[in-house]
Length: 290
Image (cartoon, rainbow, N blue to C red; front, side, top):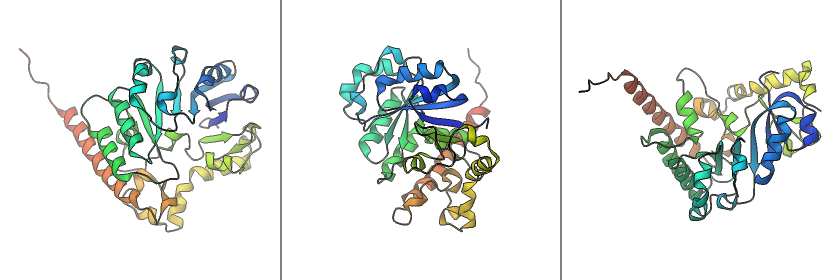
């Protein structure tokens, strides 16, 4: 159970009833973030971050200095109007913040690039709607190969930094969804394996303490190894060139949307190019100086 991480709603009683857990606490209003962090601080748990999911656009959110000590994962509805966001940029750079925006439109992708160029970390959200694969490829190339200083854009920065040609790479932890590692609680403390299963009421345990039971431990281990099912089922994803970077995360879009195939093939080449650049930099001998 040491590797388990818990995503739960902001409920002081629920949080107080947990012990020794690493928590992602969800709120739907930025103004609740400080109180949610304080609830974890007064409990016997450790805070990973506060996840803010809001219907407001990025420029509508009101950040303030009380948030400077709170780790934040902010999911706005959209990027919105950059000009209206500019008065807050200085503060945003001081925060322990990552901004997640949907990959379903170019405005959001452009917004992530703008934020990164200003030193504000971001991430692409892959929702159920259509994905702008071409715009996503442009953003990925910028995130990985752009030499001008900029903040990270996930999952591209993580993939480039952790790529190993001899193994697979799972970046779903960036979205609090790593199978068998991130568990999701409702307000009653019932446990689901994913956000989707939580929303549909599919729970595998009645409480986080019940996850230590042998039967539930087996379920958790099986979920961690669920990627193997692609090979058992002879799924097209298992033979895809981008498998090591994707692990079938976009299988539900096939066969109507095959954009993921070309995207991850291109990303694999960009990451290899990035690694070659790093190797050359590491091997460069310092030039004498007068």
